[in-house]
Amino acid sequence: IVMTDLSMPNGSGFDFIKAVSSDFPDIKVVVLSMHVEEAYIRKAIELGVSGYMPKDISKYELVEAIHSVAKGEMYFSSTVSKVMMNNMVKKVRKSEQAAQ
Image: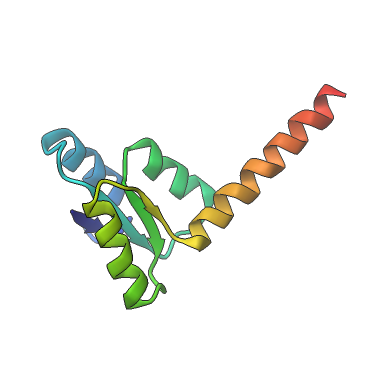
């Protein structure tokens, strides 16, 4: 398991995720970032991360996330899950309204 941030002094965390995923497909990547906006989360998911959490999570949740990913599961914090679910619900409702 590799943990990374998205904001890096010498490059993009997204570039790092791409490189790790390409060169080491068996390594699981988990993002620990201050960015909890949908665009960042979605791009990380598209690149194949196994988890995404904000930096302010507790050490207990961090350990839980590492254990989950080590078992082959995915881990997204409640904050990240809420962001994604809220945006999904908004898009579904918007498309339903457009269809009427």
